[in-house]
Image 1 (tube, rainbow, N blue to C red):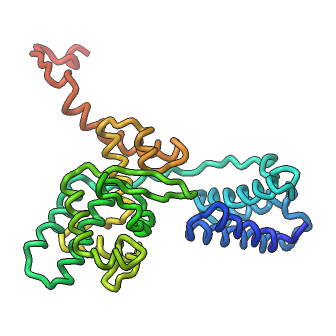
Image 2: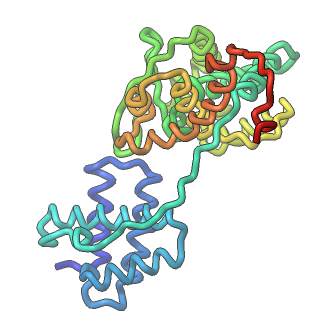
Image 3: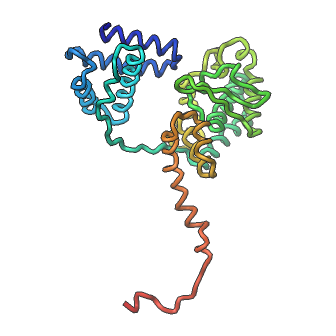
Length: 315
């Protein structure tokens, strides 16, 4: 059998060209497998039960539960590949207890009134005098923000859109999600469609000549960091103290749809989640609306009676 370094190199090549994983996932795998190989240098058999137990314990000592869970998943996927390739007789993790308590971290959303203020600030700036470049940039920023909220897409998915993935005739976007999974989302709001059309008109030459749909002023791909900075800039202009990130639009998209009684399985598909368990975390956030519903909508609130005595006085 090849040594561990050679095996991980072969596996990463497989992930890149056969599974077509995105660069961020490949980077995480490379880091996780590199740490695994380095730790196992002191062990004769890196896939022995004792070796893996020691490694899992070391992860718990160094990292938070969520990071530990991800790193274990990387090694499990690697071992599954080795089993599939008949390099290992059995995935060694099948004989190891990996259950541990992971604290639940609820997603942070942007309140509806804050989204209203944010978008209003963007559209109001269109009335201000500005250069052609500033007009184009604002046009793009509006389209990006509207799509983040309208689709609940990951920022990486939005920034790597190509012109071929945008169908203006049918008002739909084709997203390439995690694990090379594809999903199509419709754009039904007229104002969002208009924002997208305005962006395409403003950047028609850049889109036509380049590879990416969303571009910067140099015609290169709009980066995730550029979008984060853009959101920070407009939040400041709108006097919004909340630190708004692109992923918070995704959380808000899912939570607000749940609050409108949309079936969670539809939301799962729109978000591109493989497991319904991942989507269910939004039900905890949506439950925050329960207090308001029971306070304002429950029929008991409309029933009033005249009480002659205080029950406590009889005690």
